[in-house]
Image (spheres, helix red, strand yellow):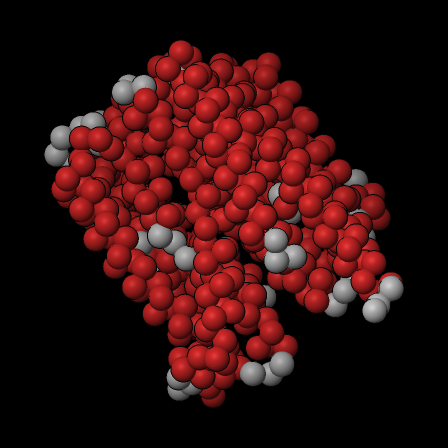
Length: 447
């Protein structure tokens, strides 16, 4: 079976799978830990408290997504050029600039969330007494800004194994801490939140420490390079950062804003809990394609820079066909056994999560089959288009959700997510192949 699949893969796809092994392994391990953690939290808190937690974290993560500059992609995009040209001093300067920008953004986002909690607490969090917990959760989770830069640098040097080991260590420690909190204090939201906050404060810094340890031997001769060394390129770096940040923010709003909207429009945290557990189960398939999406971006940048257009087209077509096979099987299982799955895993009080689960599965499978779209849009510098198409998709999803969520609750939001996940690949695929045809024509018929 493995040999048959291997024969059907082109050279670039084989390279991708080779580079993705450790990312896939750690993500699969992490998905297992996340699955266990979701069951423990859902059962330990109950549907209502779990829904409150889901809405609160969605509120914080959504705000952080808006102010996230996604600087890991910047490190890869510009760092690959510096690395290829042997300008390691500029690469170090770039990492320093991105780290400094992360510190500014992290501080700003904590202030913004603090102000929103102070003046608009009831609009976002329906349960009194969680303000300080939400603020400290935001402080801990802002460490992901620095982790993003660190992971970008590790990916640039193909340190997938080191990154994977650090991630697995974090996953195990976080799950153990949460299990202990809910075992000794079941249905106690406050003790649970303290455990979550501690895990965020401590474990988001692990990738940063790991990156320093792994990359210091590579970069130590240039560790004193000043940030002003790349001052002449600040404009182009900022332009890419701005466009990429907006498009990534829109993607994050799609991923997290749905839970927040259910909390705002329905007013029943239990519905948010049903939706959230259904989404976690449905999007478990992205455990397979997520690592590929992370690993394919540097490869696509190199292929496009090397003008290997045919190799890009061949690779993405074959990868889509392969991804569609497990996607179809996953959909059939979700459709016929949704209620059995949800009640067996999360308990009988989550029976109503079965319907949003199988609807969300369809949305997840579309993302899985077209996992290469977002990194390829970045590699082809189609960020402005990406912003426009995300805007159209979000507006369409909001309109659908506006009509359906008040009537059918969490299932209405699931249907809206399907609309979003159809619009993005439909238009993106057309423009991607159009850009590739133009690039191929320019290569074959130079002026």
